[in-house]
Image (cartoon, rainbow over all chains, first blue to last red; front, side, top):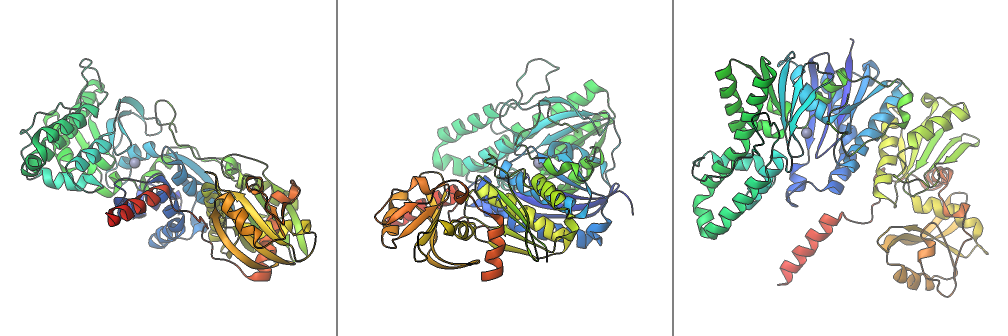
Length: 341
Length: 230
Ligand SMILES: [Zn+2]
């Protein structure tokens, strides 16, 4: 077997490992900590780091087992080096470095955001460039032009909150437990998206503007709930949820289409945790069909944080030869522009 | 049996390579921020210096704390990664016990107890009290815990004579019958002492000794207690 990559991802609250060969995912194991963090109403970095450490070796074993390969057969090991919670990243990086050092494998220090974009390279989506990619999650909201998987080019990003962050905060205002995404979507499904006129998350600085802003929507929801009072909110929760969700996902879809038009590409893709939202998936599908664009919407497992996408990013990131990687380190933040291969 | 040992719980991370006939090589990363993020790089140099390829290591011993949370995790993740890839056992050892073994040379008599003290930040220290019996053997008199320095000083008074060592010893007020070991080498962990401790007393589980809850959990429990009280 050739081009066999073992990838590890621990940047936030999923402990993940995957074995990928070329575009084929042989295993993709994800141990979610969401239940652990639910009692705090959000991800607690120290809790996440503690849990990654107790889980990561078993998750790696499981990924190798399910793929039916031993570590000796692996060609390269890949790990998320940034961006993310530093304490969480360090567990994955220390583990991957030690594994690669002891097994005498080359190491790829991959970028998490690159992973979200590169997820579309994997089977069965197997999207070939050029295309415009939307990544929307709890930590990031960005558009990239992908003419080459190795070097996505940033077109626009959020100027304040990430889309997923706005969804979680809105869900909390409506009394939906963390993580708020699935609960908000379910509630929105029973409501009228036109009931409330929330400012959509567009900060219009002209037709070429491809940035996002979600702070205003969140504030608008806060004022609406204050005005309605507890009883009023209880009566209209579904309408509030539907209108709020629409104010977040519609601009995501609209800007993705606008970016595709401007770039003149034949395809678009979406990724990140918010790409699991059914309303966003429908709007993107609809908008793309109208324009005759191909749409790549990976399986939900490949949209939310996972290690198969890190293996995909690793395919387009130079490996560091054994043992030169021993001094490599994790980083909390991404460089300007975001993705660096 | 060739044992690789590491401890990254304190601000002065330590490494050692111990062969069947004793110490082969040892090193410290030096006072370094970042909880031993350079530990694998240093390990590579140590192994090269000793002429021991990583594949020749038979077991790993790692300090499980207490100390800096990030440092403890980097050490354990590194140890477990090496163990997993090489298919060799990984054993835990107490950072405080290793510190106590090293500081025992500062005792004025064999019945003087040893209190290793690690700076836990936020005006707290991690400490314990041991009767050191030599060659890796010791007896726990006061179990490891996070202390307010004043409380620790009062507790130590009941166990005098006691000698303190470690980077947190300066934070603890001196009590009657207590003193601090001369600073320097006695204030840092020797990784070879982790191995001595495992060989004499048996290994600990490879699980961090945090001795403190995450802040968010502390706050959540406090809110729960307050809610129950009203
Ligand atoms: Zn992500």
